[in-house]
Length: 195
Image (cartoon, rainbow, N blue to C red; front, side, top):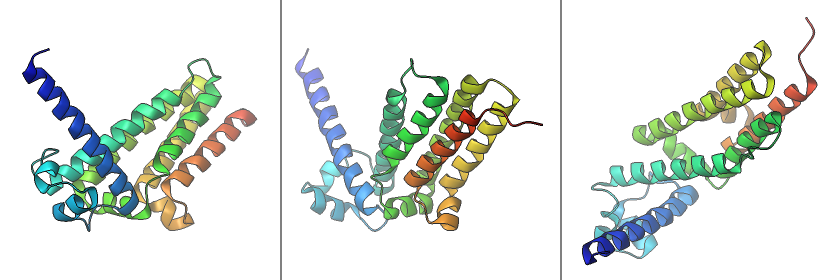
């Protein structure tokens, strides 16, 4: 490896570590009220160090939010046991989403909703998860009822994303995903309704 390659690798590792630290701050405090100077003070680094992540505060936020959802998606997929019963894979997937969202504070979710680029990243991630859940339900049940359960799961997931479930029930996103997992697994365990 050349010295240029080594420097690039070290810089990439430092940037990744910085994004992880920013992620922790965002999940705990949100990001709307934090300027670059605030973040530099919290992380005990220079503003120029933060600008190694992205060229502006808005781009830093988008990069960190994107990294959070990328990491969450990787962890959720890794939590699925390919040898598990298909019905259990549906529940495991939704419980894994719940676990990944659990560290996020109400401030983080409020800021996601208020900042259009972050809201769009969450929306794209939710759309991916909806397609994945529908596929898992189809694998588990494989009948017309699976299409219905998948569609309902998708609508609820979209309502979670939009904050509607929290507004109506007070449940945060993590708790809502855990409850959705319980409902779907119980429905699938009960079998197809008569009629």
